[in-house]
Length: 136
Ligand code: THU
Image (cartoon, helix red, strand yellow):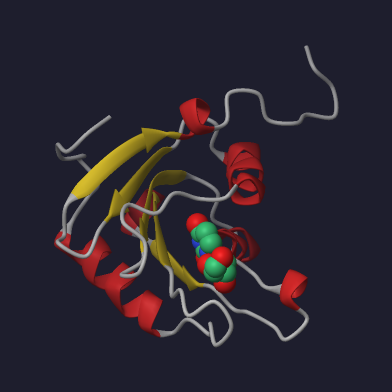
């Protein structure tokens, strides 16, 4: 999906994600990422990437946002917005797609670039066959 709007893409969500990326701890990659999950009840959970000197322990912005939401009892995800000023139209990594698909297999992912342009990607297009313990 290319640039158009989505009913849950609001200035509030954009501002939340812009703020979230400034909270990134990314001294190694120098890539700061912000994610915002728009949920039922108009709730927004944000996340930023948090790196570690033991590189593989780093956490992505998307999973930070998801774990914040789920651990506070919210699972009804309506839209995910991701943003990095260093990456044109960033999309979630495979690990984040797997974790997102557990809770919201039909989620739409919006990506914003630094010119505040948008691209939309259905999660089930980015990851058509996520791992499941039992495949029906
Ligand atoms: N990163 C995210 O936070 N989200 C993505 O969608 C891809 C990558 C982070 C992980 C790491 O801190 C940095 O970006 C470079 O890979």
